[in-house]
Length: 248
Image (cartoon, rainbow, N blue to C red; front, side, top):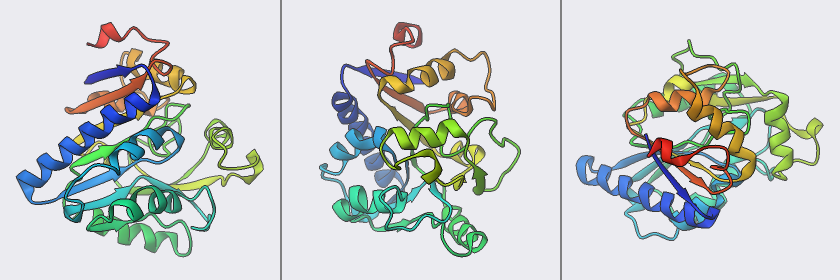
């Protein structure tokens, strides 16, 4: 694991975006194209802001993403399809993209997405960490047995309250109770994982992720530490409960 701590979310976002860009260029140079996996949420704003301003051969990039609420229209402000369309796709125009569709025939949607995903490995996964330690929507205790690419999961109350706290929904009752999520196992198949985790509200999850004696389903982000090429980007607030020198 590599760990970087910057003083502000903006500085962290720029550093993380530079590393994402570097890894994209490397993949394109080595394999002629790059397949990326993206997170969403308010924590990713600084990274996306910097990344989408960079001059990259976006036409050689294929984009996937982690999750989407079940039954939420793409027009809803909290839709991750809407988020990525507005904050990434419409800005850089990647060569191809495959969105997680939580409407209609969920089983068929997952099957079609899985077929596209497994045509080749993901080169660069940008994987956030939730306030409850989740990665994607794998809330604790995460399903560690499945080898499916995506599954339907039940969202716990803390996860749903995070969405309210970020302003995506007016109240808890408005947040869907289920989502389609990439599984922990599938996330770990990425060649490279870069985690962008700012803000004080993530400090507890960061501490639990790094201090765990071994990976645990109760803090799914602990499994990132088992990956051979994982880099964690923090700001001063999200690093406030750890001693970064211990992980240098």
